[in-house]
Length: 570
Image 1 (cartoon, rainbow, N blue to C red):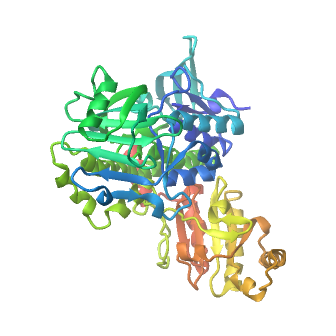
Image 2: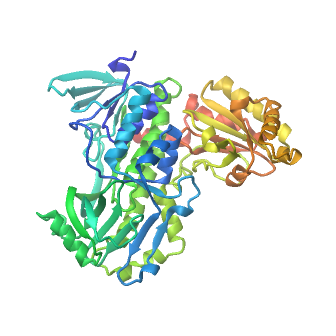
Image 3: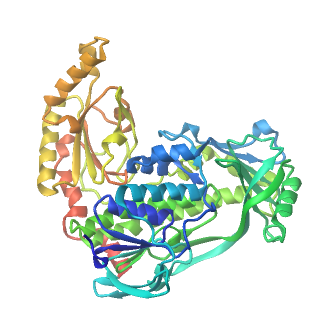
């Protein structure tokens, strides 16, 4: 049984805090999750879940539940007023190389409820509502927190770490003395409402705009529509009668629908801010506490959750004594550039649809640049986010085709029946070593056994090694259509390799060879717990794998990148 002093204090029960709690608890790290709101939200702000987040939720075992409460959205239509309907630019997400080639629309309150239900079902944890952090200070190797309970009384505890997932006005960020520089870029209002006389395709996100007005409309799960509206003066955004203001903007843009009685309306300033650092001593910030930007593209909540997904496994390793606290410097080093990319991408879309004062005809050129659609959908979906420029890998490795260290680890179908994918192999809290032999399979499998045994000796329980062997030769040798016969033959192949049933998967499709660029030289692919490639090498270079892992789980000499990060924190 953990005590208050053992627990990581997570401040903020929104999506970032809930993901952070999940990532620590699934690694047996105790947490306390507090939230100053009166209770669960019944309104919705963010409404999009992109492909990379769905891959994360599949890894966590949540994707199936989200699929039940979401609506698929193919992408965005940009309604330039001077263009005919069949020539309107689009960003169509259905071409993405993922099991989720679209994005989901969901009410944020429903989404957060799914996360809370998962936490309670799996770990018996619920956010403590009406519980507010009122004081925070670093005391040696601990953080002393003063917390106001629902009855108004106060308690004081010392925690090993505090993670501020407490939004734009983060108490944790302010207590840590972290600057949050930025600027206001617009004002916006949004409404959840029933509409009538809708003439456009409600599956898509529809952007309507002219020189001075912007409106974005799409259908939510259930009976309501989400409408965003912006203009430079604040006349409509801050109008005393929002329903009338929204209707007038829709009429001036020629959209044609009729606005019903709003279920919920809000207005706010759109800001573009990013924290100067993501950590000070044992206080960390995550999500909106560390970066906020234009909602264009719907990346905000997704980027925040990915922050928590990145930090969670690292903080767990530190708390369990597996790793030195220096690895936490990689959190800012990896995620701050992503926050900056999200801000830049959001502002690029912002200039197209909210470039007020500029005629839409003059903004069209943004959408005509070569590669604009592909670049946009890969960035907004999160599939192109990477840590290539900041990761450390052993020197002298042979350059290889396929995803590089720091890039997203692609999924691939391995077995058609019963279905098995690469992401099924990765679905556990640690690192995964994929051993994919090439032409000289027997020799490379033997090398795979060597690296597997060495990893278990040096890093017991932290790496799962899985052999993925091309099964098409077995299929060609046994063309019997009986699946049971083929399964027995594939099973015999597995048994001969020295890898047990849970750590050997035949590859029937060859997709992994294509998506990871595997040639005759074979591959060792080390995948991090957050579904990014840690490093790649040939089986003959297998000694580089434990050398790489030492930066996470050993206490090696400080690397160049760690030294830079440590200097920034000190």
